Amino acid sequence: MEKVNGIGGIFFRTGNPEKLAKWYEKHLGVNPVPAEYSQLPWVQEGGPTVFAPFKNDTTYFGKESQSWMINFRVNDLSKMADQLRRAGIEVAIDAEEYPNGKFARIHDPEGNPVELWEPKS
Image (cartoon, rainbow, N blue to C red):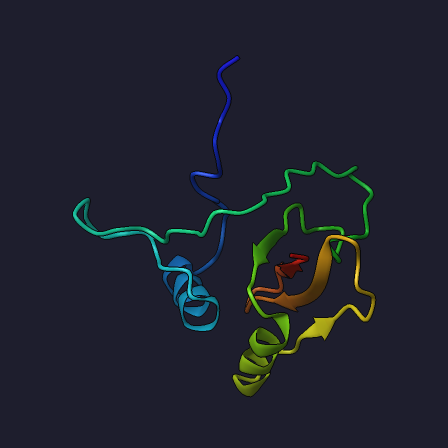
């Protein structure tokens, strides 16, 4: 069977795409969509990706109006949290360490939940 081999893009609506793209670039290192084909998009490192549809009534994303959440892998959750806090971004680190790693939650300027995951080696 032929199958997909990764995420090719994440697309969502926003009131100000340019401003939000700059926030993700500045604070999380995600390059914006290239302006021309000769430029490279953000390239992620190889690693696990979880594809998990949730029930409509989940509280995991936060507000009921939010229908998506992205989870970014990080190498060092503590260092990433410190960096974000220095930039004035609130970071909620889950106190529990799970069999698959450590997690934290932030929100982008539009209130969208963003999960940070340091996978267990």
